[in-house]
Image: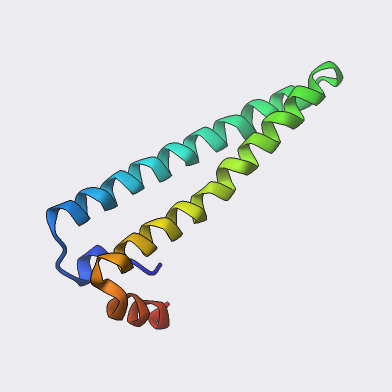
Length: 93
């Protein structure tokens, strides 16, 4: 992971922003997992396979959103003047 809040001192706004991203990230995880679970159950019945497939697709879109959110968070931190530390963390991963 590129961003580790325990390695550096950040403002309260930075930490609040980090927390908001983590909450959104977790909500996306739950939503995607729920869609996959419901889609799996629906897929057991031939009559429900098409809606179940759409739930799989929606869950996949949510899973694809997660790395996008991480990238947005990293870019915002870099824009806040953390470019040097961002590069150092990248080489550590």
